[in-house]
Image (cartoon, rainbow, N blue to C red; front, side):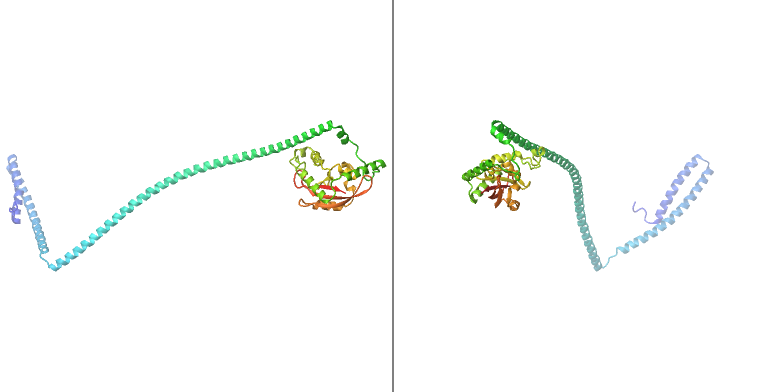
Length: 396
């Protein structure tokens, strides 16, 4: 088949044969079925058309042949041998190009690996960011819940604190009430004991309800009474124990020690139960305790002075033996009884402190009209229910 067509003429004859063979076959078939005149017409038309087609095919094949010759010619020129130096140069250039391309490929591969690593790292970061975001949301929810719990606990603490303060205030009120009741109980017990003592001792009852003495300025004692007082005064002088300043100071310290250890309801305190039921100067029970405590101190005449009320509150029975006045009269008319030294008395009273005692001299009027010079030692009570009260010890 490869050696059958050597040139274009053989190819043309083969093409015409291929064109005419079908035509003759078709004409032979028509001759068998149609008339002879019609068959020749059909054959003539077919031959004419086949001839035109063959001519057209011929020109096409001729153009194809020329183009094919030109193609082979160009191919022949291209395959002609070239210079070896040119080939070496081209080979070097090609190898250099191949090296550059290989380097670029390696670079691209490295960049691709790096990009893949960066992409993996970025994906990992995104996952971590997503986890952190989820943790942040969870923490925000937990924080909100915790804040609510803290607020509830703070409210509970405030409520408990307020309740505790209320209970504390109630307890303090009850403590105050208990103290008041205890003070009232002590007062009532002491009153009961006093009443029992009065009922059991008629002599004490008669002394309690005796008629008071007349005022100092209008007193005119009879001769018998004056003589009786003088005799009692001499008896006191014979039996007295305080004879000098050292003894008076020692006796003053004893009296201060006794007074500061007296316990009871402070009637000058705003928290006292008796304070709400009695006047401010109603401290008879405490004064009675003071009198009972100092009643056994017979070494000298003793008096208690209140700086707040600016008057004497108590005087023992030795005042009667010393001046002739009863204790009640001495307390009531003390400024009139003092004939000289009242200003010094006031000055020493207001400048007195617990660290030292004061010594003054007073001229006092006795009940039978004489003036008697007395030494007086003053001391301040440092504590107790009679705190800041002054104790005075008188001796001739």
